[in-house]
Image (cartoon, rainbow, N blue to C red; front, side):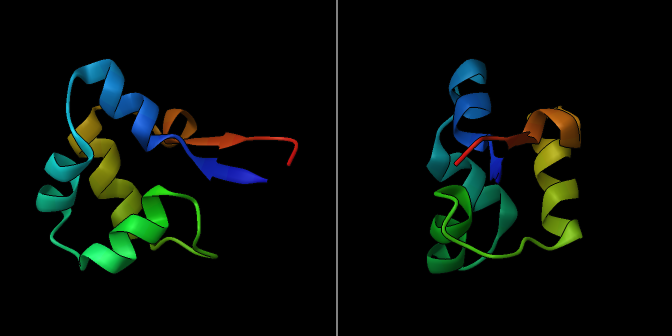
Length: 67
């Protein structure tokens, strides 16, 4: 299963989930589902925006787990 690693990246950089939410400008409901890995899809534009904001690559943002 592919999961979003944004919370770990935020913690590593000393930033909050609220900071990322405000930067992305999406609805809180959709943001919360995405950040908690409760969504079935993520738009490429959101992946790109998170990579730019967190100064990371898609390989760092998305991780494969054995769930």
